[in-house]
Image (cartoon, rainbow, N blue to C red; front, side, top):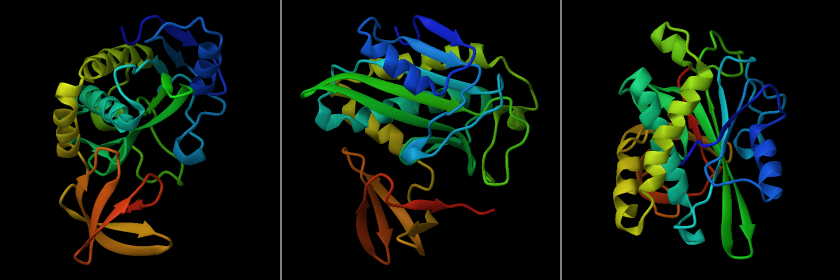
Length: 247
């Protein structure tokens, strides 16, 4: 069961680092979750740091064991996790929740959560997917370098129990994780695309220092983004493109 057992840690450098250390002991069962009240060196995507005031937000890592997925289809795990996170946030923040490629959770045009999956491989075997999720829950304001961040408190005007919400998030993730079966691969990818921010809508992007207008047309099974630029379709991998949002 995803989220069982569920450990609450007072302070760690990074829940993903802590989870990786625990998995390497060989004593962890699939689905184990670690929630931290504080991260001193939280990890974001592409080497960025994710910081959060103590006790205010969700800093959660789950040790998933996606043995049903071949390594060639590993993007589908990211799809399932993003869908579960979006399902969770929709419950509390409403249906203006969406997914920004590849797996950030947005409310309107503002970022509510990020997801970082680090794989543990043994040869060609996918042993574990260390799945970290950071959700902005009770933070009342954000530093100037995060102009498009948003928290659940800012959206709803309420203060929430972050640990209890993290348990609920695990339940939503479990539902999506259970759908990772070959019979559902296409349906999961299509639902992911239906929730994608800017799908078939023009927007501004930056690539190699150039800012241009483009339109997302598709996401391929391997996770590549198909972006239409000046009538041509270009395929982009993770980290190759930056979304430009209005300030």
